[in-house]
Image (cartoon, rainbow, N blue to C red):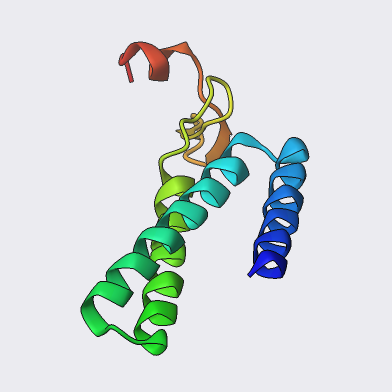
Length: 105
């Protein structure tokens, strides 16, 4: 039992140490995956009552948590791209200007 706790502590420390160099989106996806995996494991165990249900719940929860965490990352001003059309009808992509942020587009 003590060895399991020690292994878990080492894995958690390694996972948190890797978060230092991640972008905000990656950190949110990682946090979502960890929380979703834990919640999914609890739900899977409560519903199925066996190891297979727990593993399936943890995998599904981790996947859903990572997707939600990544999708809810706010975009910083200047990072979003807008589509523009020049006077010759050509469409191009460029960073959004102030008209986009002010709602005057």
